[in-house]
Image 1: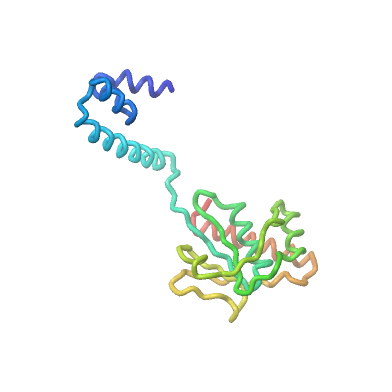
Image 2: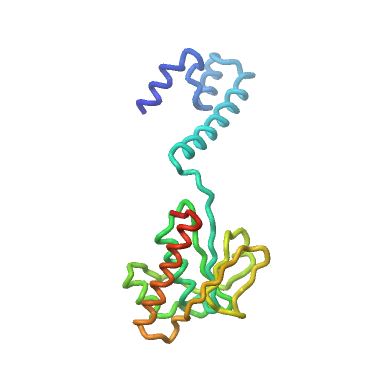
Length: 197
């Protein structure tokens, strides 16, 4: 508020304090400004507002292009769920978002995966396997498949990596923890490579 008062006092004599279309319309309604001048003022105010926001983002390092990473396996009940969850937890949410899907999605995330992730402070209880569709992959920055060999999905034109990870289904908890930690390590590497911190 103090900054706005300072701006009005500094530039009021030059601009009439027309920082806002409401001020301009009010001034015109009181015959302080000709109605023919209202539209150019409003256009200048809107352009100035967008330029100011863009400049603030650049100045404070917040101008980032959001990237979408699709993590896919066959059943979307283990590895891809872990990977998406780790990216959501570790990456800057202004720079990256994660989607998890499968070519033949199961009915639920494997209970052993839920337990292992919960131990690591990540709640996957609300996660639901979903089918990988072209619509889901459209606009993504990268498709990361989870060691599903020939069953791995292919989306033409989309940058792709394959992470050869063992399926945690049916594995003892000790092994699932190892897979969980390997997935986390790969996500940490992805964040560094893609500058998503």
